[in-house]
Image (tube, rainbow over all chains, first blue to last red; front, side, top):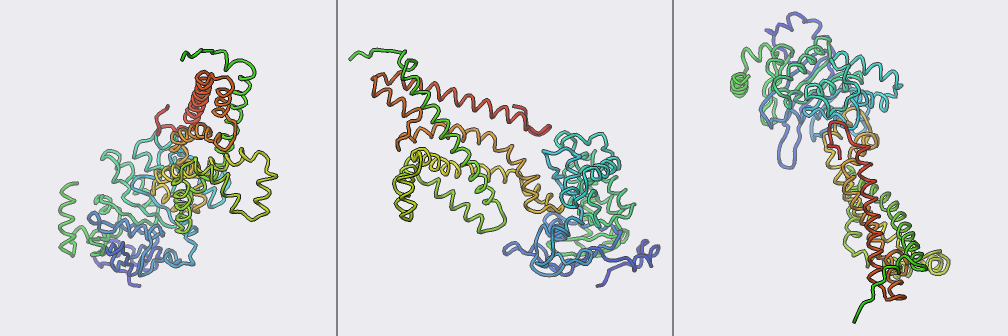
Length: 267
Length: 238
């Protein structure tokens, strides 16, 4: 598998050897998907290396969220392969439940379980899926809640929290499974502008700690400053995959250029 | 013709006893039918939301059959027709040895009919929980069974409490149809009193009041349950 890298990427120069030796965590290879007659994904290929942050951006309906959901099998696909840490996602024999327990996912609308407290939200899967003891799951949850700044909200229900707090709790819920990678599906799109930064700060902290992340987002500031690489999609195709610096300095396609000029003018 | 009102009829012996016996049968039929309807209805309702297509089709078939036939006709079918369709030994047992045949037939007929209606409410409740919640549960590694048990069903149950209350009241009132296959429940006993005393208005008024008290009690109980399980920050307190 070839890993597209730009020689002018600062990361490449700095971490040259490290990058080349890093294992591939997520490998998407010529994946295509149809909804009836509609091609949602066309021959998409990209990789996410260990410890890397890859931002997937593009206009609405370009297939970014669908591609992300294919990675942990929430969406199926008809052609191509996706492997996560060596396990093929699309294969029938694959234990999807086990694979999903190793991949954290954060949703646009948080999807916290409304009838459970924040603490119960975070400990449910560790107890039921990983078989951790209640006290171990509890300790882990509390330390994660401290990390995302919500230790005092442990016993609240999601409906009693603001959007930004809910999303931070959702990130803690995903981290409680000790995932090998995190998927973010437009994590700030449902938030008001003031609370976006509190979520982005948590994500930036995660990236600094070396978490492998695939992030679908419109937050170009996050992409520019935190991502190692940016993937640009339109119409179900991956049009560009480049180091973040290079992508923002000089997008190679006209479509990406016009997308960037519009979205950056807004932000 | 002059009607001689006598409001003492429904509260004097032996007619008060008849009404109380009728009330007891109404509660026994409605209660047992409710338990049956709830178990079958929840099961069928869940089947209708599963990824497995055969399961969904079976659920849809059940609902279609039991919703399309009038309840009164269903009771007649269970009482008069079904035993004839069974193997001879089973039919023989039903006709000769089944204790309280009117009672058990009413329970099964009313229960399976109501189950189809409950199934639809459960399905609507599960769908109201939303695909996002199922996705979140699946993404965290929960199996389908676990996601239903810990996430989908607890939330759906809260959504369906108000319509289930209506359904519970329907079971109480629909149990009056059991009189057509000979069960002397509350309405049946009122008719008995009318036949005996010609004071039908008083007898039926008494029965009406008893039904109203029953439904008001059921409503109060369900409201209390709704309050107990209300989710802080989500559903308005009732």
